[in-house]
Length: 42
Image 1 (cartoon, rainbow, N blue to C red):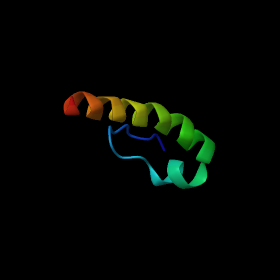
Image 2: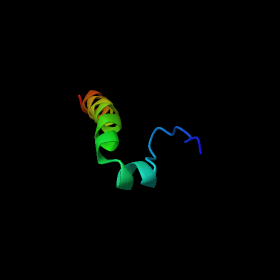
Image 3: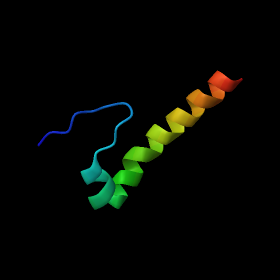
Image 4: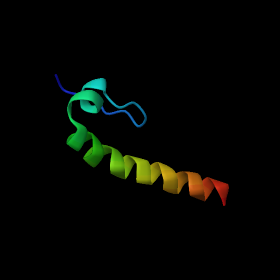
């Protein structure tokens, strides 16, 4: 099944079954979120 990309939601399969994949995909997403939060707080 193709996964729908959503800016916030992370699929449970990715989260539970693929820890390496999860980290590789979450890292840029989390860094992006952190940078956006820092910008909005400045």
